[in-house]
Length: 144
Image 1 (cartoon, one colour):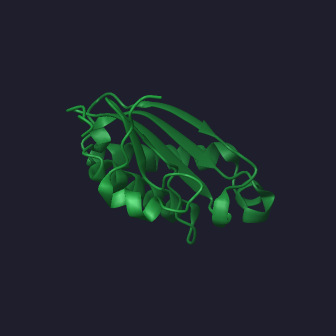
Image 2 (cartoon, rainbow, N blue to C red):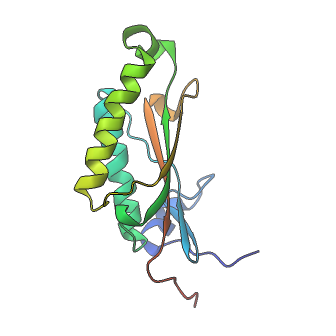
């Protein structure tokens, strides 16, 4: 098994959970757990999830500019109203605009990270969106 490290700020919050709540760092990569933020409109939840992902990146010594891959999940649950009230293409167009603005506002240059977007039936805690980041550390950590 490769050596990995969970940042101190996220270690305590992860105890007793079925997964790391923040990041697992395997030099030179940082894999974040999914960030969700239930409550509010889809756009509000997505923006809060992006901000939570950014906070976890910072705790891991990274920024949005270090992200090399992003996963975006949008609930496809008819109960949430997404499929009923808004065409899926409109949902993705709206979230793409929000995502690009957020990433550019947080230091990402002309080249956006690779990204995968898909729609599972539902997400935990009734969330409408989830964001997962994989980043490359500027300075790989040395495990002590």
